Image 1 (cartoon, rainbow, N blue to C red):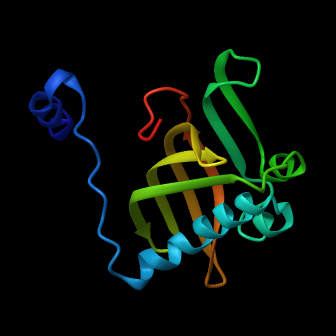
Image 2: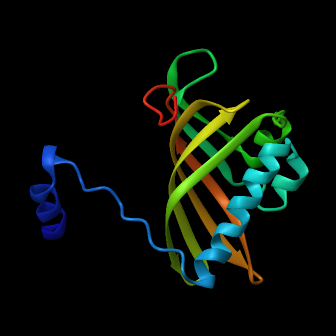
Image 3: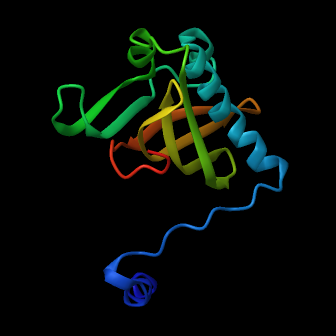
Length: 156
């Protein structure tokens, strides 16, 4: 609690300072990013089967931000349900940058800013938070939680 109080006192506007990305200079961090990058490649192709190879199907995809009906709110579903409605591909691309990665044994998390481009134009952005589990030496994503906004994105 003392550390949190010190951080809040040192941060302008009573906000915590931004996370500092960990330099990706070890094979451990690279291994954690492999399923994340594979998911993005599958999304870019609209390939649900390829995406499901890198996740726990009963894990969750949760988003907070604008919904398809225009209202703000929480959306969540299993990876399986997410894959069933996946109709992306040609012209869709999501990218992350400066990921912060933390690993403890067989669990890990990746926190990174992202943007989505459709036909080269930024449509939304936010922060992705992946939590992963290593089982049998293989990292898979259990859950993805992300924020989403359609304004204030770099490159808009």
